[in-house]
Image (tube, rainbow, N blue to C red):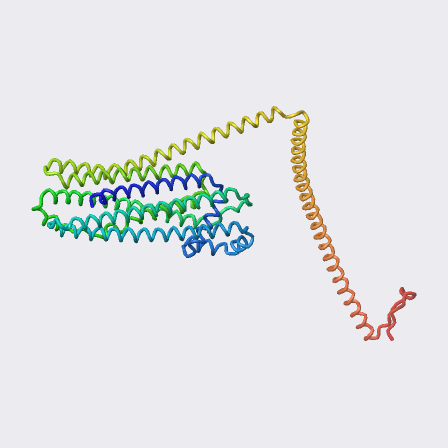
Length: 463
């Protein structure tokens, strides 16, 4: 039983080491991959989770494009997608099986511990418990070996798939990401942040579990040393559900490894990806140190007897709570300053290099090229002059047209007035003529004989 309890933190450490090594391998492999292969892997993940929000947004935005791409995709891509899906399903099944086996082992361990505490008074029952402990240790070793072999096989399959993706010929460049793809990437970022928070909570639960294991060990030692305090230790109940979420951290790490590079490699360079991974590692380390300080402070508070130690531990715990936020803010400001300085220096170097290249190109020009450049400048100046002259001509023509229109309008008005005067004169002459004709008709009715033109000077004769 003691050996089994000693092996529990060792197994946890092995699991953390394997997760860390796998994360480093995957990060290095993803940094070496080109952009189009990363996008293909991201598309595979969308096919894996078709009911997620980013996958639905992406499918609603580019359903037709996905159908065309699926029609024109080579068969090797489909084969690799099926293999990746199969491997992911096997990994999930393996995780579920490992979780169930660990829960069963914990339940059996708890039952064995209860039986050992209850039958500790009888010395005759030690041998069967030792045999059960040995069998449990053998089963734990078998499960551990099976887990390691399966992890090795899955890692080899993933490396072979990555090698096949590297050996594939480069395809055509994909278009720039649209609005829906950016929304999907933002959703992936939110999900990654949530997973990071869950990872932090799970690390805290692991540390709490390690603390409970240490406390149980201390209780066991005290129980073995002082048999009278057995009733006191039995009052501290052991909760079997505390160890139920041990394998969740491993699963969250794998999901983080799968989702984090695919959502950020589309817009980030390898340097930025490495910088972000370093930032995340430093934040995790600071969180780990903070939790360790809190554990130390709580342990000291629980086991200290003097009031001075309690007050000192309380002050230390308050300082531990205050310092991480300030350190995080300071670290973020320093990182932003460093990135801005590096960006400014890179831009200055690029500007100086471009100016130098421009100067060298101007100096290295042949006389024919210089003559051609001078001719181009002359042509540009001539075109500008021509445009200016055209503008002036259009202005002059527009002014002359306005003057001609004004003159024509004045002449029309003059002739109109003249015609109106003539029409008035004709109207007056017609009226006079009508009055003369009326007088002549009146004279004819009175019997006056009009003299012809030959007898114009003779007197009139009344009939």
